[in-house]
Length: 120
Image 1 (cartoon, rainbow, N blue to C red):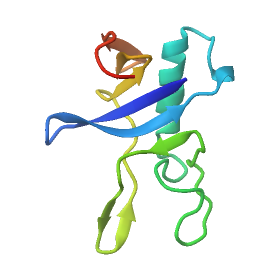
Image 2: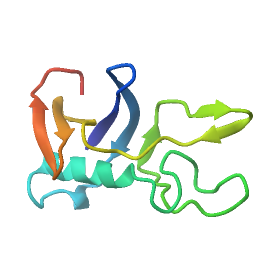
Image 3: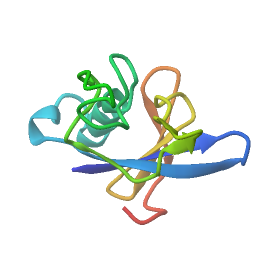
């Protein structure tokens, strides 16, 4: 199952597609497959031990603990002064699209935002 992750850009008042997350089948079947997929995608788009949006190693050769082969970064990283900056973590207000249904990240969990309204 693929989850599209769209970050809410507060300055531009729009959503930006930043990543696609491939959710393994063993991560589903706990509550609801779509909500389970959103939770997995949220977890994989957090910067806790490194940067989810950068590769398996940093420029200095250090291991990136947040890298996952299940995450495809689709929004280019910001580069300033020759240095590349990773994307922020997923947060409340971001959108997660699963099977064409749009879920908004809420204070706790996810709520259905729109059903079958955009291309999955």
